[in-house]
Length: 472
Image 1 (tube, rainbow, N blue to C red):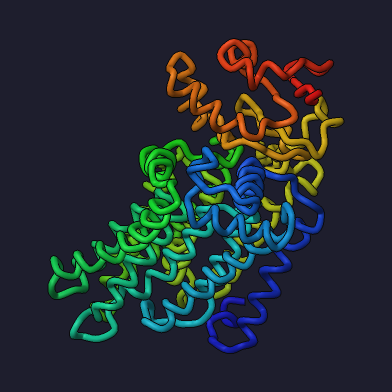
Image 2 (cartoon, rainbow, N blue to C red):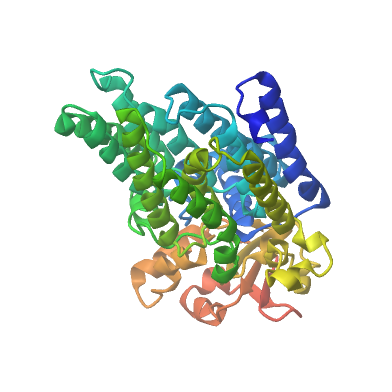
């Protein structure tokens, strides 16, 4: 198998596509439950497609470009879960083939072929976390495309336009998932080791990074959403991001296979001497990339949706050393088959009786969201949930800006302040939802503070659920 993929012919590319689909599509065909991140993305896209302005009409911390993509997908199809899964698979394939193309074009390793893409797709199939479309997966695609712009094309050094483009792409990635800003460190390190004029080149990189932010800030300024952009996207910084819903312990155990492959590859790379100075410098760059990827994953303690994707570029690069020619090629073939079998076993462990218990790793699908049976009769209604559990939105529609309960505490957490009460009245008063789901005992207090709006809600037979009385 290794010998086959060490060639750069169209047959190898077709074989990779078939392998990727064979690894991923059967489980998607079985059906995967909706994740917390996917539900939030569906709700954000639905509200934006309905005419709401992000950060002004929606208290939500989703990065602006990711939110725009969710709105575009909702415009194509209402609550398009299948479209989300197709986009996630497409993005992963694009990342794998683009990274492989960069490795071959710049000859970062003496051997060429599709080995890097093969490793990227096999290791990326370990968890179903990458089957879900996430802001991190989207933003990471731009980081992959920025890599080629960080590499010099001649001995004279950089073309200024390439450096600006590299910074611009990193900025676009950060506009999808803010912690990807840390990859500026990779860009600045590339400037230091490759550029002749490091200070001037660094300024070009930084100008490119801030340019998309300037464009987005200008747009929000003219739409009246700039204060919300600062409050909900920039001020939280690298925290307060939605998690994947998987326990941190399970996330760490799923990283065992990528870490094992990376460790073996690193050991092999230390014993390999590279002839070209550029190849040595590129290896140093990928070591810095690995450190930055770990730091980006640590921002959310490894629980961000799609965090596995951060490990794939270093694993793909250093695997070139692991799979390079050896005196015992059969041993490498055996190792690849073991890794492929381990990836398939981990991915499909829920379909193999007893495998979850043996591995002590419950399937990720067991942590997916399912509709709350208490509100099964509530369908197609406008709803405001006063609490963190938003499963009731499965079959209903959010009707107010208060989608993210943690960010909504900017108002509901300060109801002793007159300004917060006024904001609640302004946001809910024009179009009150048909139902309130009170998970935090807020309704009695809101009835006292804003009787003109909340006085019309009466409790139903379902605890915590209030229905608005029709106007006479």
